[in-house]
Length: 306
Image 1 (cartoon, rainbow, N blue to C red):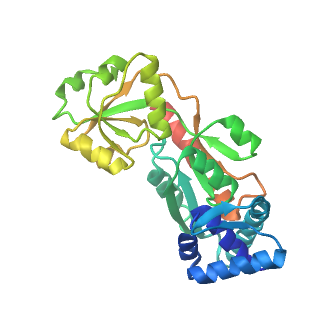
Image 2: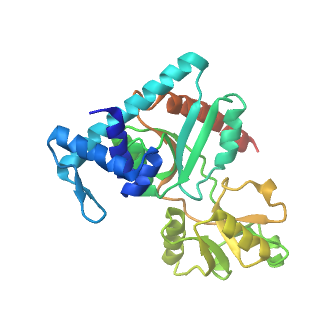
Image 3: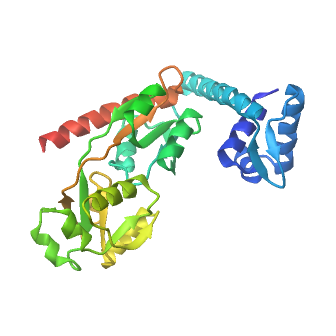
C-alpha cells in the first residue's frame, strides 16, 4: 500500500467516475484501475462496485475510505508544513463556496493577499450538502456558505459567522425607472416584477421561494441560471431584476445598476467561513482561516460604522 493508491481512492470518491478520477490524478485510466485493484488484492477486500461504469463503494470500501481521507489529509498537511519551513507559508488553497453567498470572495482574497502574497487559490462552486461532505472528506480546505451551526458544531468545524446584510433587489434604472423612488420594497412589489434568479435547487433560491410562498405569492422568473454572470447580464439589458444577498456583488463592477432592499425574514441558516477542527485543518487552511477571520472582523466593524 502507498499514498498514491489512497489518493486515487479519494479522487474516485470525489469524481465518481474512473476517467475523471484518473484525469485529476494525472495518470491514465488503466493505471488508476490497476493500482486500485492492487490495493484491493493487498487488503484482501472488495472496495469498489464495478459494472460497465463506477457503481459506488462496498461497505468495506466506505470504511477504508474514511481512513484514506484522514491519511491523505495528514500527508498533504505534512507537505505544506515542510514547504512552509523552507520558504514560508505558501501554496494552493482549495475553497468550496456556495453560489450567492453574502460576501465577495474576490474582495476577501484580495484583502488577504496584500499581506500574504504566497497563497494561490482554486475555487469551486458547490451545493450546501456537497460543501459539508467536501469539508468532512478534506476535498476542500475552506468552505463559505450557508450552514446550520448545530451541524458544524457536531462535526467540530471551526467557523467565523459572516455579516448578514439582508437581501437586495438589483435593477437597471434605464429599464425600471419606477423603482428609483423606493429605498425598500415589500414582497408584493417584488412579486410583480420580472426576475433573473438562480436555479430552484440553490439554497438561496429555495429561501426566497419559501418566503414568498409563505406570503401567498409566487416569484416570476424570466431568466434562471446557475451563472451569476448570466443573471447580471440579464439585469443589465433589462430582462428583469435580480435578488441577491447584500455583500455578494461588487457595486463598482456595474455602476449602471442600482439596488434597493427587500423586506424579508432572515434565513434559518447562517452564512459562515468554515474550516476543519483545529489540529485536522492543514497549516495552510488554518493560516488562511485566521487571516480571513481578522479581515472579516475589521470589515464588519467598518460596515457597522457606516
